[in-house]
Length: 236
Length: 236
DNA sequence: TTATGTGAAGTCGTTCACAGCC
DNA sequence: GGCTGTGAACGACTTCACATAA
Image 1 (spheres, rainbow over the protein chains, first blue to last red):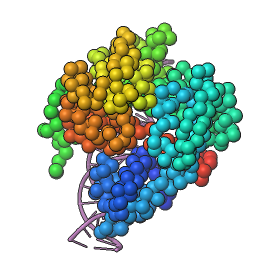
Image 2 (image 1 turned 135 degrees about the vertical axis):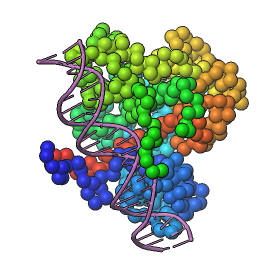
Image 3 (image 1 turned 90 degrees about the vertical axis):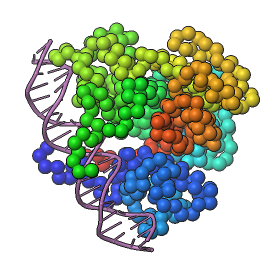
Image 4 (image 1 turned 180 degrees about the vertical axis):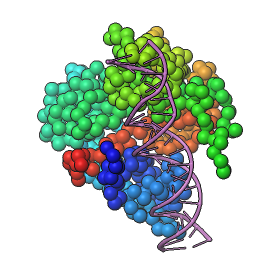
């Protein structure tokens, strides 16, 4: 615990991208795709960053972790940069996703464009409500329309095994979430996206990301409340 | 630009809570409420932090921005702390929320427990699809069941004005989002929660928070891909 | 001349470790 | 003795400003 040699993951030679950067790459990617669809071929960091809602310095610093994909004095080739970001993100290969919980939220995810268009294939739908089990839901797996039947919760492990899904999405009520989580982990899933408002306990080999809709609103409310005290006290 | 005296908002006397802390307060609040429901009266930072998935040092540091609500050698009184956090978050007063877009996602939000239980009241539902307009949807406004009719998009400004809603939620497809946003801003909304996968342009008096479901998946996929290279290279 | 890529400086957030109080 | 509250050390992220290359 004395010297800090070799500690702290020294970001060896371009590898080891900061989390904050990783979180922005998908946005860059999406904006690049939309530019490409608009027929734009070259773009400057200034212009692209503005469309992404970040500063140009931040954008360039982010890209510098991936490599040098721009041309000084010119800018970035849209399709070249798109390719490298998508490769870094792993959008090149298709990821199998199992969704547990086919209520409104689950259905929203299934019908969400960009879900399938960004390298994700929904390979399994699971629920435990009798009314929902057996229902056939149409989704698009990598461009092709596919009808998926909602399967009962007991088959979760079988489905994960058979489809080799890598990502599990928990879209159940809060009280089922930990149980579903445990079973996803037991069946080999190591990446979980959790929409239930609970803190999941998992082994540290498993990564959980959490989206809590109410939390986002509460953060907004906090700032809204603050504005009441100091309406326009931005300037010194 | 020479000396840094007075710059950088010196966090005057307890005011000015770091963003990272604000983002965690809702989680602390939720866990405290569940402890309270379980009959727990006192809790240590260690125990509570574990349930929230953070370190106890971080938890105590976060609380220190709000004030000193614990007792040394003992811990925190659950209901006392709950009260102070909820007051800080503004959950004490009810916030009016207008939801634009009553597809699967909008419905998921409407039926989301904890939405209404945390000080939010859905006061307006807006959509522009003829099949949906006029539909009556039951929600709970601060405990009471209320039936809300879905109103046409043209009435958005009227509804915001009449209900004095403070928060707008955009749950529309991407291509309508900016237009809806502009109209929310024009009608006086200064806090927006955006689920559409676009970067919204707003005046800087308006705060936007964004939830992009696919982005979260892409971040997971990034880490999943990384694991392929170095399966268990955590230990030196 | 223009716009990228990047060290260096600065800001923000987390962790440590211990003083202070029960 | 135990647990909170907090300065100080540390690390992560952002911004600055300029060397570098087309």
